[in-house]
Structures are given as structure tokens and as C-alpha cells.
Image (cartoon, rainbow, N blue to C red):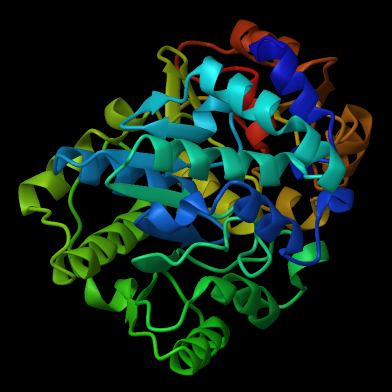
Length: 406
């Protein structure tokens, strides 16, 4: 199979959370253990940083990778989901895995994948571990897909575990309280391995302290320990928290003496995150006059910060291109949006996308008024056509909306 056929085959295997949602979630790691044993446990040859959290884990992972690259290391980076090309998920020093490696890996292991009914995500994790091991990276930054305890990435023993924050997202899988979700994320804390916590609440802090004590793991609360952060080319307001998490994680790595990362490496790495890693969709400016901003924030905690940042901008009229997936609590997120904006409702082009008419009707209950459009592209084009030079256009609500316009 060529590359596109290979990717299509991967997408068409057992349900993939990105597209189908709940039916893709697995209740244990038995399949992942089968997979890594089949691959001769490539993860055992990797030095890793493991990053979980409701929001910010993607930005945090990319900033960490950028800093480590600036320090001269060969850095693997595994993240999800991708925006345009599957290979965005697996990079070394900012360069995507080759199409040939993806094809060879899948073709070589296809009969095993079919026999064991490996999911898309499990195959992707195995591919990343295999690639990083074969390429002999110095360190790999591994982002959790969802949750932590039962995530397919949770078969590594990292140098440091990182949990950015806890919010109410994916409640159908992870639980419907902060404590329950924190317990799932805290599942990445390993015996004797230090853990860095980005943000915490009273409820989540207790969970983290208990789990760290059980595992004899030193715990660092970055928001209490890091008083000053350095500038970054990731300029969303929410990056202030992520930068503290990153700086504390680097401090923990430096103490281990295996890695040597200077202040200059940290400062330069933060300023060159986008250039070094190719990260897209985080308070990303797509145009000027009118100013056009997109952001992948898609849950209450993330959207709250982004929408507050929009209000700090100077504009005459706000235009919002909005699409979501069908497992969101619409009342929870729609109440955050400004009533004085003009809305352009759309459906991301995946099976989990919420039908535009349902979003429009629900938005109307919150006094959010606008037209529905048959695609993200048409909604975006209409917003650009209607906006004056002094206006602001914001595109958001889902990673998959952003994927169609960047």
C-alpha cells in the first residue's frame, strides 16, 4: 500500500476516538502490552517525559521539545490529534516521520494488528515508540491521548511525569467530578518518578498528593514554585500556566544530571517553539485587517481563557466561526460566548461533528445569533467577506474546525 492507502487502512480499523468517540475507548492496557511485546518493547530504550492534562498538554509538550532541541538533543515528540497530516503526531527535531517508515511499519505488522484488533491510537503509539527507538533519540516527549491511567502511552517509565491541569472534559470516560478526572490523570505517576503539576484546585491537589505519596514520588507544584516566566512565540493568555509547568519540568530534568539545559536554551526554546516544532492552532493569527485568530480550545476551561483574551482585543465588530463535536455539553460552553458577536455556525467534516442546525438552535437559546453554513470553509469565507478592516474574526470550538482552515 502507498502512504494514503496505509493511512486510510489505519483510520478504518477499530473505532478511533478522534472520529467516533465513546466506542473507541478501551477499558485496560492489555492490547497495548500485547503490542509493545510484539515490537520487542522499544519504549524500554527511550528516555521520556510523559505529559497529561485536560488543557495545555500539547503546547507544553511542544515547548519542552523546543527547549531540548535548543540544548542540542535529538528529541522525539509524540502528540495528538493531527491537523492536516497523520505524520504531525510523530516528529524528531520538528521533522515529521517519513511516509516510507509509516508504510513499512504498518505493512510489516498488519496481520498482527488485524488478529489482535489494535485500535488506531494503539498502532500510532507503537509506531512512535518503534520509530524513536530505531532513530535513537536522546529523549522523547510523549503526550497522553486522553486521561492517563488507561491511555496507550501509559506503558513507559519516564524521567518525569507532567500533569498540566484538570478540567471537566471527556466526562463520559474519565468521570464527572474533578477528583475522578484527577485520579485518571494521576494514573501516569510511577513509583519513584518525580511529577510536575501545572495548575491545581483544592480537590485535585489532594488526589495528586495521595498518589505521589503512594508511589514515593517527589511532587512539584509549578504554579507555586515558578514566579517568573520567559516570553514565548506561543502568545495565548493560557500559555502563562504552561510556561511555568515547562520551566519546572526542565528544572527537574537538570537536577537529574543526565541532561544539561541552560537558561539560554530555555529562553530561546520558548521563543522558537513554533519554528522548532511546527505547532499550529494556538492563538494563531491568520490575517490582518481584519485581524483573524484561530484557537483549538474546545472545552469550558480552555474556551473561557481564549474568549477573555478576545475581549482584550480592539475591534469594531466580532465575527465568530463556530463548530463543535457532538459529545460536548453545549449549555456549558455556549454560555461563555459573547452575545454581541455575529456567528457563522458550521460542522467539522468528521462523523463526530455536531450538525449545524442543532448548534444554531442551541446557540439561539443563549442569544447567540447567526447563520448556519454547509461547511467550515464556506462559514470562514462568509465571515471574511462580511468583516470590515477594523473587525475581528475568531475561528474555534473544535480542533477539527481549525484543521480545515490552517
